[in-house]
Length: 133
Image (tube, rainbow, N blue to C red):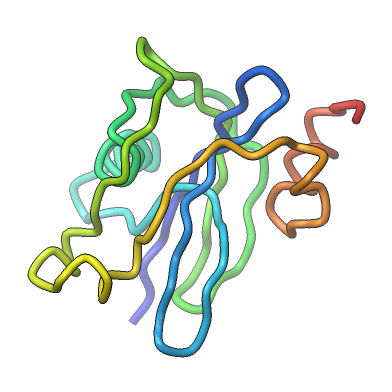
């Protein structure tokens, strides 16, 4: 089954917003995002996913890059926050029936770009936007 996905690079004051995923086999920080529903554009999916995962409202800007993931293509867009920039841990609707400690989404936080410069997605964002660290 293929399912396109979108993610958001949200940068504010030299920091990038990331969510922490934990599963049985792995744990990692990643950019907020998720699968695109059949009735959505990438931009709509990213706005919905960022709201679900972080509680923040965003405006989606330019496409930064496209990469292959296990179910198809993932498109990463630059996004800007509309209003409050204090994230709150949200949820993944597919996991909402599980106790919090068993859900994939475990944390949301701002990270200094310098600290995440070696992350695969963040390094692409830094390079494409020409950010000097």
